[in-house]
Amino acid sequence: MTSTGGDSSLDMDDVDQLLSGLTRFLLLHSAEGAFELRDTVRAVGRAYGVQAEVLVIVEGAVLTVRHPVGPTYHDTVRIGPELTRLDLVSKAKFLVNRILAGELSAAAASGELAGWESSREPYPWWLRVIGVTLFSAGFAPGVQQTWHEVAAAAILGAVMGVLFVAADWVGDLRVLMPIVATLVVAVIAFEVLHAQDAQGGAVLLMIPGLFILIPGDLLCAATAEIAVGEFTPGAVRLAQAAVTLVQLAAGVIIAAELTGAGLQVLSQPAAPGHSLPDWLIAVAWLPFTLGLALTFNARMRDVPWMLLLVYLAWGVQELVLAHSLVVPQEGETGATAAVFVAATVLAFAAGVLEQFRDLPPRGVTILAGFFALTVGAVALRGLTALAGNPQVQGFNDIRDATSETVALTLGLIAGAGAAAAIAAYRRRQPKN
Image 1 (cartoon, rainbow, N blue to C red):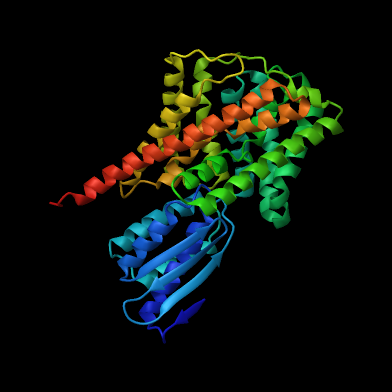
Image 2 (cartoon, rainbow, N blue to C red):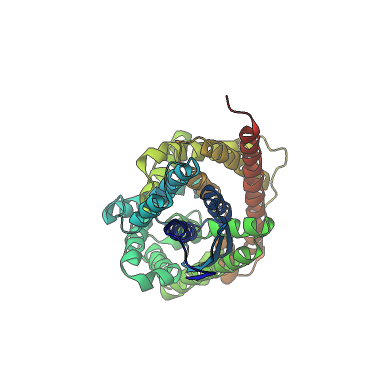
């Protein structure tokens, strides 16, 4: 950190320290996109009478703080984004609100923010393992609606949960998770669960267990950042998503060869299955959302809002699909329009809820619905199908993943823009 132009007063140092800490915190928790980082830091700076600017890349940021009188402050922050502490994301919204309302000094806000770094996670490790298991089992009916799929998802989800928690204990394992965890899960799927004989296909059987690693959120965040002019973080995040997808596909391919299942099982067409009652498919989003909250340490008081938006996104998507006038041809999903409409409604609802002072932030409420609509699983299935036999189905899956990613991204931008317009209109209205 450097200062230029003379000595700083104590108040100036407090503001600089707060803005540095806030930039670091927001960058750390920007795995779903860095859209609001710059605007938040600017707003907090204005609240304390300074001009703050941030240049953001995915794993770093350069902060510049210009004071009315005195030195200009510079800080370079470097930290890799992650998605592990949604409870702190909620706390950050309320902290920023108190700052903007003039309720906290810079020193007090900085102290509160610093205290979060040493705070313990709200849930023990074993409960997070259960969370990943629920997350996987709850997502399974949305992939293949059979009892076998749900049971396999629960088993593979438990294995993934243990690996996921172990990665937090062994730092180097986190980097290797996409390939190592996928290889372990795929070997178990082939050797124990006989995925090669699954009605829905081998890859579909594994997808719920691998879902926590599939970078559908990265694909959409990257596309959205590029769409709104954040080219540097968008391009980097897009490359990261592509590399992660390749690692996941490689893990499945290597497991198929090691177990003797053969690559041809990866390109077998999925036979539709539907042995679950409709009410159970709807109820499955309950453990899905609870599991996500436990996995990523969301506050239990925020779960009802997360669940509300999950059902909203899923319900809108199903409604559009049910009333679509276009019948998908063979090899097509027909979900592009449904994903766009559902994403628009999801982002709009999350943006409106965020405007209420006591409700959790958009980054928390939207996450479960976002995962429910994510399209990375289609891309993974396409890559593995191409490895098994480069036939039309693999290219169709990649095409569908691309079109649905664009639709999801544009829907999120449209919904968020509409919600932001409402917020701006409300701010312009005179207060009674």
